Image (cartoon, rainbow over all chains, first blue to last red; front, side, top):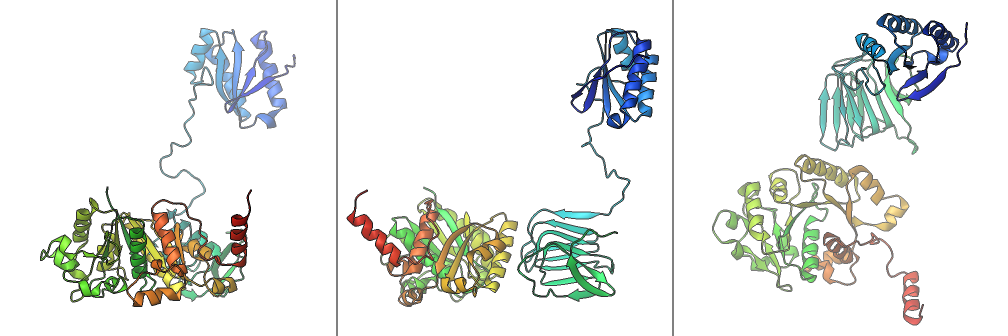
Length: 228
Length: 268
């Protein structure tokens, strides 16, 4: 079997492979063998094949696409100057050049698309000032500070990416698993479910902390990624 | 010519709104600007006292709003500056006598002929405050380097932001540099850190303010007064000049004198 060295070029987000000259019956298995030899490199990749003037039918393109798919490679485009090949590609829904991308725009999303699961949260991108009030049944996330005199009441967790200096109540409906996290945890008063605590005088060097209930007691500790 | 309407407010009482309004009005008048100061603290008026004009009150803000006099009749001309006027508050009524709409209309009537309208807001967050900010183009938030004053200032800023009149410009009043150095008093950085708005003035604690106010004079007229100089700087910044924030530096220090001497004697 003739071993082909692959001519690969990165184009857009695909790998463009220029197929060697020669009969398709020879070139095709060599191509697949070469790709198999570097399966790790190609895994998950999108591949565009430049086949030149060859006339390839739907059957040939289809079988090649399947062979690649078995290696977790997507045949994104077949580039050819032969009209028959172009038609065959079109019939199979394969692009005829890399400019056309039939792939869905990842930013077009309807609703939440995840197999991981999650809960409702409200995201607030500003500093909460004295007198500001946020009440939400789910989780509350603030990108900013929470000044003294500001108040957050959440049924879920409260995450402050900033300085927490106001009053916060997480797990307000009774959820003792709720937690409160902040880059600087210095609240006027902190509540989780029915537990209430004040912040002890903190040393000047602030670090990210999480407050939660452990062994029936409300405590704050330095942030370490927990195992939920 | 269209006047800039500036409201001086704070939330907390006693931080220096009236002092600032009076001093900024005089500072601007000294720079040949046409200024009208309005006391919006109905029922607890004191801008007239601090400006030394209490004996000259015939008509007040409520008389104008209720149509008992023309606007010009209520405007008292300052003794020293022909282009500085005061519209005093009423002392025998309360803040419900005037509405935000009334204030907007009154300021609109003044805009064409004057350069600045300064409104002295009452303390608090109720009707008086709402009246005072309604016509404002710009709001000066006064505070002291003291925790409850800063808390109230934060509340006020939140309210003016919610009204889309924000964010306001900050004046930190009654600063004692020695206490700040010792760590006994909030520093400018501590305060701006929480309030997160731009600073337009820092005014040091100064006995001369009280002395002047008792005489119905503004501290800006006293060259020895550091607070007076600070208010002049604020007036200059309001006019768009870029004045460095060195009000707390020891101006008459040894180093300063040496430099002055050097410049006078030598040639570069």
